[in-house]
Length: 151
Image (tube, rainbow, N blue to C red; front, side):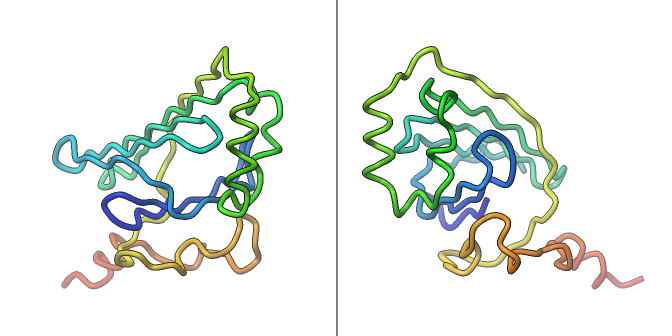
């Protein structure tokens, strides 16, 4: 997930029932709940709602996804670059079914956390699994800061 600015994120889903999906310019509500505790929430054209709590210093996330029934039954339909299929996603949402909603709570560890500035279109520019996406060689801001600290 790239927090592009105070109201927008770009993101990729790498695994799970909708792994392979990616989205740019998703409008979100982003708030600081406390020092180093943030909440990001949004509602997608698919009818899916997402809430993510982020604790950057602890490198921890907790998210809850609320999938409408149609995504649970046919999630593969959403495994696209959503921005190219917005009308299609809305049509699937409107056709339903919506209920019962599948609630998926999960924890995650932040493997890469770095500051790259706002509104950088290159941060999420390729789909999950793209060979150009290998970020294993990159260091996040905290590793760079530790490496630069005087001994």
